[in-house]
Image (cartoon, rainbow, N blue to C red; front, top):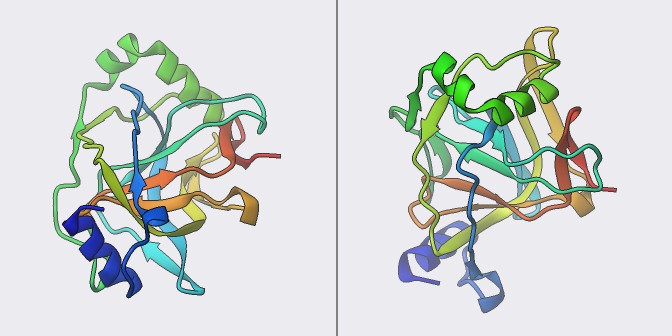
Length: 203
Protein backbone atom coordinates (compact mmCIF):
# COMPACT_ATOMS: atom_id res chain seq x y z
CA UNK A 1 0.00 0.00 0.00
CA UNK A 2 1.08 3.58 -0.49
CA UNK A 3 2.05 5.47 2.67
CA UNK A 4 -1.21 7.47 2.78
CA UNK A 5 -3.40 4.40 2.27
CA UNK A 6 -1.36 2.40 4.79
CA UNK A 7 -1.59 5.23 7.33
CA UNK A 8 -5.36 5.43 7.02
CA UNK A 9 -5.68 1.65 7.37
CA UNK A 10 -3.50 1.66 10.51
CA UNK A 11 -5.57 4.52 11.96
CA UNK A 12 -8.86 2.74 11.32
CA UNK A 13 -7.88 -0.81 12.23
CA UNK A 14 -5.07 -0.33 14.76
CA UNK A 15 -2.67 -2.56 12.85
CA UNK A 16 -0.54 -2.44 9.74
CA UNK A 17 -2.12 -3.83 6.58
CA UNK A 18 -0.91 -7.20 5.36
CA UNK A 19 -0.13 -7.78 1.73
CA UNK A 20 -3.37 -9.71 1.46
CA UNK A 21 -5.26 -6.56 2.43
CA UNK A 22 -3.45 -4.29 0.01
CA UNK A 23 -6.29 -4.12 -2.49
CA UNK A 24 -5.02 -3.09 -5.90
CA UNK A 25 -7.94 -2.28 -8.09
CA UNK A 26 -8.71 -1.97 -11.76
CA UNK A 27 -12.25 -0.63 -11.60
CA UNK A 28 -13.76 0.87 -14.70
CA UNK A 29 -17.25 2.24 -14.08
CA UNK A 30 -19.58 2.51 -17.05
CA UNK A 31 -19.74 5.94 -18.65
CA UNK A 32 -23.37 6.10 -17.55
CA UNK A 33 -24.75 4.61 -14.34
CA UNK A 34 -28.40 4.18 -13.40
CA UNK A 35 -29.53 5.77 -10.15
CA UNK A 36 -31.44 3.86 -7.50
CA UNK A 37 -32.12 6.72 -5.08
CA UNK A 38 -30.60 8.87 -2.37
CA UNK A 39 -28.37 6.89 -0.05
CA UNK A 40 -29.68 7.09 3.53
CA UNK A 41 -27.22 4.95 5.45
CA UNK A 42 -24.82 2.02 5.31
CA UNK A 43 -24.35 -0.67 7.92
CA UNK A 44 -20.70 -1.69 8.08
CA UNK A 45 -19.35 -4.70 10.00
CA UNK A 46 -16.11 -3.52 11.64
CA UNK A 47 -14.22 -4.83 14.64
CA UNK A 48 -16.85 -7.34 15.67
CA UNK A 49 -19.74 -4.87 15.61
CA UNK A 50 -22.02 -3.29 13.02
CA UNK A 51 -21.79 0.50 12.65
CA UNK A 52 -24.52 2.58 11.02
CA UNK A 53 -23.19 5.35 8.80
CA UNK A 54 -25.93 7.92 8.13
CA UNK A 55 -25.62 10.47 5.33
CA UNK A 56 -26.72 14.10 5.63
CA UNK A 57 -27.46 16.50 2.80
CA UNK A 58 -26.05 16.61 0.23
CA UNK A 59 -26.72 12.88 0.10
CA UNK A 60 -24.87 10.54 -2.23
CA UNK A 61 -26.77 8.59 -4.87
CA UNK A 62 -26.70 4.81 -4.90
CA UNK A 63 -26.25 3.66 -8.50
CA UNK A 64 -25.78 0.42 -10.39
CA UNK A 65 -23.91 -0.54 -13.51
CA UNK A 66 -26.14 -3.20 -15.07
CA UNK A 67 -29.45 -4.94 -14.61
CA UNK A 68 -30.06 -8.68 -14.85
CA UNK A 69 -33.31 -10.64 -14.98
CA UNK A 70 -32.36 -13.03 -12.18
CA UNK A 71 -30.01 -13.17 -9.23
CA UNK A 72 -27.79 -15.60 -11.14
CA UNK A 73 -26.18 -12.67 -12.94
CA UNK A 74 -23.94 -10.00 -11.47
CA UNK A 75 -24.11 -6.25 -11.18
CA UNK A 76 -22.16 -3.62 -9.25
CA UNK A 77 -23.14 -0.85 -6.85
CA UNK A 78 -21.57 2.61 -6.95
CA UNK A 79 -21.77 5.51 -4.49
CA UNK A 80 -21.62 8.89 -6.20
CA UNK A 81 -21.54 12.35 -4.69
CA UNK A 82 -22.14 13.27 -1.09
CA UNK A 83 -19.88 15.04 1.36
CA UNK A 84 -18.31 12.78 3.97
CA UNK A 85 -15.00 11.60 5.36
CA UNK A 86 -13.56 8.42 6.89
CA UNK A 87 -10.62 9.22 9.17
CA UNK A 88 -9.33 8.79 12.73
CA UNK A 89 -12.74 9.86 14.05
CA UNK A 90 -14.44 7.17 11.98
CA UNK A 91 -17.20 8.05 9.52
CA UNK A 92 -18.64 11.57 9.53
CA UNK A 93 -20.53 13.82 7.18
CA UNK A 94 -18.87 17.08 6.21
CA UNK A 95 -19.99 20.35 4.72
CA UNK A 96 -19.68 20.49 0.98
CA UNK A 97 -21.46 20.67 -2.33
CA UNK A 98 -21.67 16.94 -2.87
CA UNK A 99 -19.84 16.85 -6.23
CA UNK A 100 -23.00 16.22 -8.26
CA UNK A 101 -23.88 18.43 -11.21
CA UNK A 102 -27.48 18.63 -12.38
CA UNK A 103 -28.04 18.14 -16.10
CA UNK A 104 -30.99 18.96 -18.31
CA UNK A 105 -33.26 15.96 -17.73
CA UNK A 106 -35.12 16.04 -21.05
CA UNK A 107 -31.96 16.37 -23.11
CA UNK A 108 -30.14 13.67 -21.14
CA UNK A 109 -33.08 11.26 -21.33
CA UNK A 110 -33.31 11.71 -25.10
CA UNK A 111 -29.66 10.64 -25.51
CA UNK A 112 -29.70 7.90 -22.88
CA UNK A 113 -32.63 5.66 -23.75
CA UNK A 114 -30.95 2.55 -22.32
CA UNK A 115 -30.37 4.24 -18.95
CA UNK A 116 -33.95 5.50 -18.84
CA UNK A 117 -35.14 1.97 -19.63
CA UNK A 118 -33.08 0.50 -16.79
CA UNK A 119 -34.43 3.12 -14.41
CA UNK A 120 -38.02 2.38 -15.40
CA UNK A 121 -37.52 -1.38 -14.97
CA UNK A 122 -36.35 -0.89 -11.38
CA UNK A 123 -38.76 1.92 -10.44
CA UNK A 124 -42.21 0.57 -11.27
CA UNK A 125 -42.18 2.00 -14.83
CA UNK A 126 -41.68 5.55 -13.50
CA UNK A 127 -39.39 7.86 -15.45
CA UNK A 128 -36.29 9.45 -13.90
CA UNK A 129 -36.78 12.69 -11.99
CA UNK A 130 -33.20 13.94 -12.29
CA UNK A 131 -30.02 13.55 -14.32
CA UNK A 132 -26.70 14.07 -12.61
CA UNK A 133 -23.03 14.10 -13.52
CA UNK A 134 -20.35 13.09 -11.03
CA UNK A 135 -16.58 13.19 -11.14
CA UNK A 136 -15.15 9.86 -9.97
CA UNK A 137 -11.43 9.17 -9.69
CA UNK A 138 -10.49 5.50 -9.46
CA UNK A 139 -7.41 5.11 -7.22
CA UNK A 140 -4.70 2.52 -7.74
CA UNK A 141 -5.28 1.17 -4.22
CA UNK A 142 -8.24 1.01 -1.88
CA UNK A 143 -8.38 0.92 1.91
CA UNK A 144 -10.64 -1.91 3.21
CA UNK A 145 -13.11 -0.64 5.82
CA UNK A 146 -15.30 -3.66 6.56
CA UNK A 147 -18.02 -5.90 5.17
CA UNK A 148 -21.12 -4.12 3.90
CA UNK A 149 -23.80 -5.59 6.16
CA UNK A 150 -26.78 -3.64 4.73
CA UNK A 151 -27.64 -0.62 2.60
CA UNK A 152 -30.66 1.69 2.90
CA UNK A 153 -31.68 4.03 0.11
CA UNK A 154 -34.76 5.95 -1.06
CA UNK A 155 -36.70 3.55 -3.29
CA UNK A 156 -39.53 4.55 -5.60
CA UNK A 157 -41.45 1.61 -7.03
CA UNK A 158 -44.41 3.64 -8.23
CA UNK A 159 -46.14 3.81 -4.86
CA UNK A 160 -44.19 6.68 -3.35
CA UNK A 161 -40.64 7.15 -2.11
CA UNK A 162 -39.61 5.38 1.08
CA UNK A 163 -36.38 4.14 2.69
CA UNK A 164 -35.70 0.58 1.59
CA UNK A 165 -33.16 -1.54 3.48
CA UNK A 166 -31.37 -4.44 1.85
CA UNK A 167 -29.42 -6.65 4.27
CA UNK A 168 -26.81 -8.77 2.53
CA UNK A 169 -26.61 -12.47 3.39
CA UNK A 170 -23.30 -13.46 4.97
CA UNK A 171 -22.06 -15.15 1.79
CA UNK A 172 -23.17 -12.21 -0.38
CA UNK A 173 -21.65 -9.29 1.51
CA UNK A 174 -19.39 -7.00 -0.50
CA UNK A 175 -16.39 -5.24 0.97
CA UNK A 176 -16.69 -1.51 1.64
CA UNK A 177 -13.50 0.39 0.82
CA UNK A 178 -12.40 3.99 0.44
CA UNK A 179 -9.63 5.89 -1.28
CA UNK A 180 -6.57 7.07 0.66
CA UNK A 181 -8.21 10.43 1.43
CA UNK A 182 -11.27 8.75 2.93
CA UNK A 183 -13.58 10.90 0.82
CA UNK A 184 -14.85 8.33 -1.71
CA UNK A 185 -16.46 4.99 -0.87
CA UNK A 186 -16.35 1.94 -3.13
CA UNK A 187 -18.38 -1.28 -3.00
CA UNK A 188 -16.10 -4.16 -3.99
CA UNK A 189 -17.00 -7.76 -4.77
CA UNK A 190 -19.92 -9.51 -3.15
CA UNK A 191 -22.46 -11.95 -4.58
CA UNK A 192 -25.45 -9.88 -5.59
CA UNK A 193 -27.06 -8.24 -8.58
CA UNK A 194 -29.70 -5.62 -9.42
CA UNK A 195 -32.91 -6.93 -10.97
CA UNK A 196 -36.27 -5.25 -11.63
CA UNK A 197 -37.03 -6.07 -7.96
CA UNK A 198 -33.97 -4.18 -6.69
CA UNK A 199 -30.82 -5.59 -5.06
CA UNK A 200 -30.91 -9.37 -4.82
CA UNK A 201 -28.31 -11.66 -3.28
CA UNK A 202 -27.03 -14.31 -5.67
CA UNK A 203 -28.31 -17.83 -5.26
